Length: 562
Image (cartoon, rainbow, N blue to C red; front, side, top):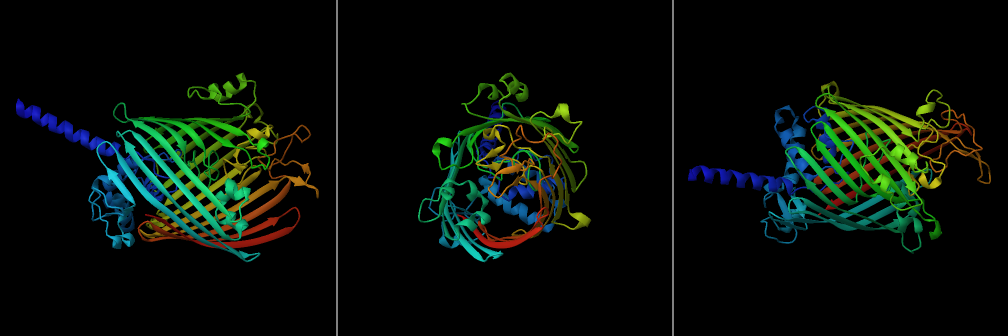
């Protein structure tokens, strides 16, 4: 009997320790981390099931579980995929970190290497690390150097220099924390800096431009609580600020693209079986104004339900509300509500959106996505698609991995069409924007886009990428004094006015066609030292005025994390 009790106690302790190790990696993986690309390719290859890339932020523990699943099918991987898997296993298997695969700049009690020669090795690198059963802490020094060269129509260059830090960790196996701080400076053309890094367009220090040296800063941070009340039931609560995207889209997303300022938010995520639910409330600001009295805060509330049928498809429905001019509205804090009807009961002051989306999983190496987006309430007028109130958009796309049996190659095709006035509102403060930047798809309203991408992993540290965009846009028409004389619904910051026509044709207004070619070569010859070499060519033609404008630029970027 004593042996049985001892065996049970030992089994319990082993299970507890194993669960602790899993739960202690609950920090979010930043949305720009290349692990998401690898997991996406493995999902399309049917090595992985649904990876919820409609709500893509994952914890390190979740990534580790996916890597375990990939490892269980290692015989189905190409040589390069196996090397990429090994690379990420070293990074995300914290419990297997030793002096042989991990370097720590400042000596600690974990037994990691602190030999300075390992700074340029293939080992995982930390400035400082601490790990115990009840707490973890990891500190990294972040840096970036960018040289950008505008080639045409006018030669100019700029350099960006960043330095900062990120620390992260988990307490009590459930409470997660993270903070990152970056400060940067600009040398050369400050105006061209925003072309190299579009985040400058919504960075206060850059836009304000009151100091003698061009500079900028970025910060993100959050607290997150994660628990599994019963087996395979996942529940998390988060408050913070970090980059996130929402909805489907290969090039850009109709719902929340990430090509906009980082939002401050509170977020609830729930997943159990085939059912997933996300609810979040975020705040942001309007476009920059030198008059501080004109500044204002706006809120975005979003709910989304999704059903996932393994090896078949995922189907979701989501809604959001944007409102301003008051504090947090309790009606939109309720995750179990239909926001449009709430908005009507609050006297129809706010901007409501609704969307439906679908992603398939039933064909190996081939995935399809579709999203239908409705802005405000056009359901009663869909029979007349030329009516301005039909603020709708849709997106259709396909992801083909290993085409023609060529390993490590992927093709993406996507078509997006957005009708006039989508993302706009009759109250300029309630537009679907932050800092004047569209929260949804980058092309904006009264536009469509054909997007193509080809990517190839030459090996585990070199990735080639080519993108092509063909964008048609109907812009608003202004006179020589800058007065709006024809509202084509092409500006998300300008809603429909009483004097504007009710019937509006798609792509009416000042027609502009744009071809964009982007070549990108990413290299990581030394772990956590990443080189990014980019060339971008743009051919733009104003069809209405018969004016052509060609431009091109390139940049070399080095990012390091120590």
